[in-house]
Amino acid sequence: MQWKKVSTVGIATVSILAMLGACGAGAASGTTDTKKDKGLEVIGTNVKYDPNHLVNDGKPISLEYWTWSDGGVDPVYQLAKDYSKMYPNVTIKVKKQTWDDYWTKLPLQLKGKNGPAIFNIHNSYDALIRPYAADYDVDKAQLEADYPTAAAHEDANGKVKYIDSVINTGNIYYNKTMWKDAGLTDADIPTTWDQFREVAKKLTKRDGDKITQAGFNFNGAYSGLYQGLNYQKGTLLFSADGKKANFDNATTKENMQFLKDLYDKDKVGSVDFGNEYSDSFGQGQTAMVYAWGWLEGTMKEKYPDIDYGVFATPTFSAADQTPFAYDRYNGESTPGVNKNQSKQQQAVAQDFVKYLLANDTYIRKAVEGLNSFPAKANLQNDADILKNPVMKAIQPRVNRLIWPGATPATVETSGKVAFENVMQNGMSIDDALKEGQATMEKDMKGSDFQSAESKYEFFSEHK
Image (tube, rainbow, N blue to C red; front, side):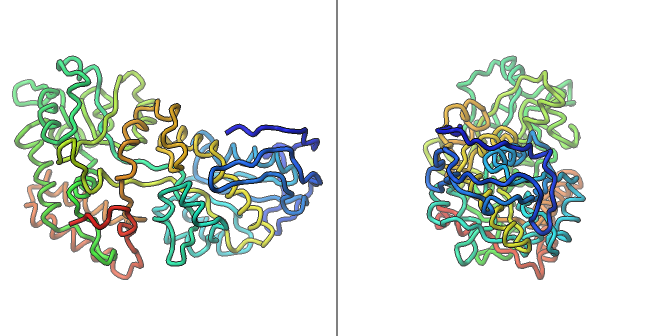
């Protein structure tokens, strides 16, 4: 959102990149801010932020923000600059690390007193950073009103250390040229998997027994796809107590057979038709793929000439019936606050986080940079955001997407191996599921993982 300026601030501002100060003690040379009333409006719907105050009593202070992302993806780069313009005594120095270096160096830094006051979070590393992250100093009811998925991140005391800024899930991407060539129109977009099978057949081309154009290619997408299919049928990924994987069951078997039949019986694709569905789609060899929002960035960067569209992943139920969940989702996280930093640094970091949570601009930039759906309620029907086909596909389903929690990696990797054993190595489905379940249980032994599935609004509807 745009800040409405009511009066001139009257203080010289200093660029975030130019002001370099000490991170550790919080003290820094630079501008002192003496103007409490900035002449700026209060922003926010439920979580509100009033900028008319002094930060750190107006005394110079320098903080570090660590991230693995570029400025075009991570909105904190820009919001940190905006924050420093309002509070010229505050410097937020952005420090970028490579992904691998980040998760090696960050925990070591957070253990000490001189680590970054603010840091980017990926929820897959929740267990690694949670011991060093401070609880947000934000009203719980206000936070939940603005961010419906916030409750999934609350601990037993109703506290959060981060929440979702934006969320994403799977959709079907289709090649519009192939669609038209097959005589298909918008009226043929399938809503059920039975309809999808017939459309995929029409989009498949062969030269004898050899497929030259796959109607549907899910090579490499096994894990994400089976999880969504299981949820559609009301089967959870984890046991009733949320601590054990639930992989070897009748639903997974049924869905694995369904996917296998797409290749073996319907012959709309093949395990030999490329190892990576996104490349096959981008190279104009595949008509439809299941993918999350990141595919748009890949297409824009590597395959800009492909004319493609997006529609919601079909379900097993009729269009007028609502499944337990359409799919799982995952979120991009808001920043963490280092609980081992000084009280002064933590206070500024908490103020900055509240500024982000109240500020629609932060979410809009995350939507744009990450091609993901806003987790903030007041933006979920925003006309500009819904111009994006991915956002338009997600919007009607957003309340029926489920987050399983910061899922252990074995659930995905072992699931993928199980599917590859069946699809490529000739293993029986029963044996593959049994082996996958055993591996997941072994890998999760001793883990303190707790599924977030029970926090799903419609949890009581599962089998």
